[in-house]
Length: 572
Image 1 (cartoon, rainbow, N blue to C red):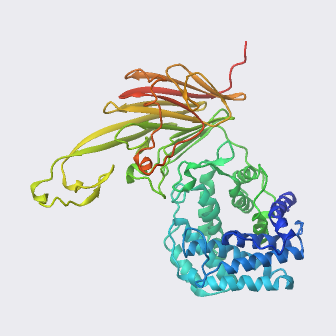
Image 2 (cartoon, rainbow, N blue to C red):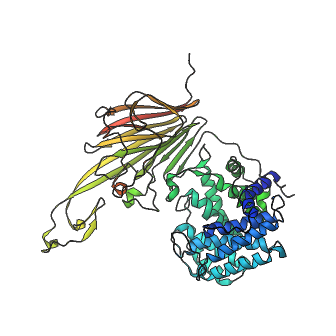
């Protein structure tokens, strides 16, 4: 017996589409000036979906058809002689155009099934798709997820306009292997690109090509993502190698994927995630078209599994550990790419945050550790070891060098030596040919993830240099304890401090085991975050904002920091 339809979900999806489509349909002849090609194609698809959906206020509306035609003309005008689309910072980009062609092809399927009223629009969409086909067939990419977006566009083109060359090209890309690791994370480790590109593209390819292995990849990624869902309804991004590594990412874009696989597999954990993804309401206007193209999305979800607490997970490939309980949700991260590559670069995991703590409404968004060592930037663990259950060690050793004279056989009378980068700076010094005198600095952080927070033991060894631990709390709370040091920041010494939001609080307490006393509030030169020269040389920073608390000093040092989540004791 088929699963019944979820009429409430369908109505919510239709309302989301109407919120975007209705204003356009109210002014069907108004030219969409300045709208980029991807938005134009998405708008055309949404208008056609609303026209076709009985739950939409625009069902059967001629004004919706007229508005779709207006947007389609603007889209055709944005298409260049190559079939690719103009606009954006990626010039003549096959993958960027593939995003648009994917929507064009989906809109073509919806329009072709709607009858003669959409005949001209169906023909216009076919014209645009045909003009783009050649460039997408031969075009290249420049990020990992682009392969799957481009493949999805080629597969959609073949679905509507069969051509064996399109499938052959898809085969070339897929023969590289899907970039998913043993833990279920794509190589970019990005929630944004998993939700918006890799998962939907691989689901489409699995359907068109009948490839169960691609469906399995998506299921593995969604399974891995379950342990990255945070109490605030976002997906953890500190591990990402893309732009979202410094920003929260909502769970909502994962809704269609969790919902579809929950319906098809009966997985209660996916059903729970789908409900969480929709908990804040459904706002994605594109979901309506997805439900028409994939009717299983409209089926009722299986019963959700209850949340299991406490639970913990160590994602070895990303070096990220999580522990969740009824009291606290803690994230520990040691998977930065910077120690290996010695640079800050788009496409690398660069975020220096190594700990987060959620305690109800009180949230410690970021714990970071700066060191004043040759301006090489904050602590980013080069190694993460699991010492025992929920106990980990993060370690990084930095080295810098002073260089000796060149060997006699490498010296030049004209003094013109090879320009080289030695890890801190570049100069015409032929660094690789010179003997080195190295200076080293090691930071080690042992972390015990507890049900009510975390215990940190920080060991800073090497030369006597300044260091500062920065704790950034999400705005909205009240800090008690410590000393103000300006700009809304506070200094923590050895007296406890609390950060409270409503009835939730996080308590911080530090104890020095070895080394000088901690710096007082007068040491603003020590108690600060230093992003390192890769940022400052171009006038940039990756500093956090919010309620920031510092403790620091002049190393070497060994100290413990206790972070406890809970609720304050009632007043007596």
